[in-house]
Length: 296
Ligand SMILES: Nc1ncnc2c1ncn2[C@@H]1O[C@H](COP(=O)(O)OP(=O)(O)O)[C@@H](O)[C@H]1O
Ligand SMILES: [Mg+2]
Image (cartoon, rainbow, N blue to C red):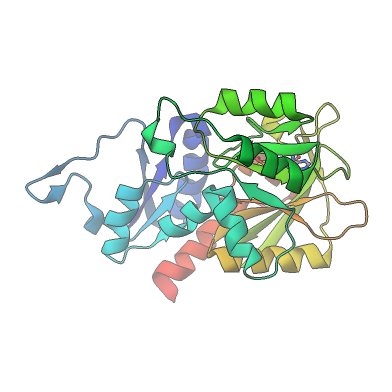
C-alpha cells in the first residue's frame, strides 16, 4: 500500500487542508494519514520512536517539526517541504541572506536578532548604539516585524524615536527585523505561487484599511496576472530556497519593478485561491509529490 503522512497544526485549517490533500492522493490509490503536531506526543523508547516511519513513503509538512522531519529525512523519506528549506524560509532574515547572495531585489533590511533569544536575560535591553544605528541606516518611518511572523501579526510602522523605544521595550528579546518602508501602494502585494519549480498562479491582495495586505489582517484577494519578470524571479527564488511549494510575495511597486517582500513555504488559502484562479494548489502539489516519490 502506497502511503504518506501529513503533519499539521489544528489552528492552521489542517482538517480542511488534509481532506483536500487526502482526496487527491486517494484518487491515485495513495493513503494519506494525518498527524496533528499539537495533539501528538512523540516518544522515543527502547531506541524507537512511536511513529512508524518505515510505513510511509513521504511526508507533507504543513508545519515544520524538526524531530519528525529528521526521523523521515534520515531514512531517506522525503519531506515536502524539507526541514532545512522550511527553516530558512520561516526566518525572514535568513531568507534575505540567501536571496541577497543571488542578487534578488530586496528592501534594505536590518537584523535585530541576537543569540540571546532563548535565554530570557532579565536585564536585557537593546543598547543606545543599536537604536542610533538603526535610525541612521533606515530613517523614519521604517517597518518593524517579527523575524518568524505570519499573517501580518506584529508588523508595525515606526515613525519616531519614541515609538522605536516603546517597541523595543515591548518586544524584549523577541527576534525582530527592521526594514525600509516601501511607500508604493500600501496594503497591496502580489503573491506568486510556485509548485514543483513552476508558477501555477498569481493573485493580488489589497487592504483598503491598513498597510498590511494579509487576508487574515483584512486584505482582499483578487485575480491578478503577475508580470513575466515577477514570475521568472519567483521560480528563481523557489529554486534558491529549495522550496517545492511556496508563495513568493512581491511589493506592488508603482513602476512594476520586482521587489520581494517575503516567501512562505506551503502557503495556505487553497480554497480561496482556487475560487480566484481556477487552480487548486494542493492538486498541483500532489501531482508533483507523486512524480518525485514514485516516478523519478
Ligand atoms: N517594508 C515594508 N513596507 C511596506 N509594507 C510592508 C513592508 N513589509 C511588510 N509590509 C506589509 O505588511 C504585510 C505583512 O508583512 P510580511 O513581511 O509579509 O509578514 P507576514 O509574514 O506577517 O505576512 C505585507 O504583506 C505588506 O503588505
Ligand atoms: Mg506576508
